[in-house]
Length: 149
Image 1 (tube, rainbow, N blue to C red):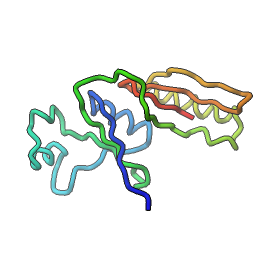
Image 2: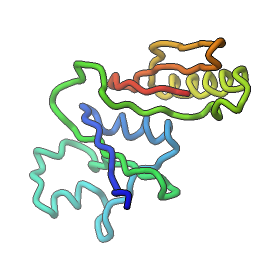
Image 3: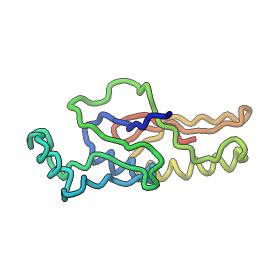
């Protein structure tokens, strides 16, 4: 039996990454538990000290609106990113190798442009026509690597 899991991403600004990754993945911010108007109210109720919560309503998680993908939590940490990720996401927007390379390239580039407008940065373009492959390595607003394939 498969095990249910969530993906936790350390960051310095959860609000910024929640907004970016919601747009990038088509996810939505997770609603607070039933009976609580905000996540902040929930965390205070369960005993998390206010000084640990920072400002805002503490909405630091995303969920797949279709209920298929994993929950994603953005965990605030004091230090910034310093090394290459050992785990990264591949955003599969091209359609796979059965789709003509030029069509995949167009789809990937269109999504990359949207992600740049949302705060990401292009890092490297991998264009290998002889291998029938195209993808773009990107960085989210805090420098975490991901690929658009």
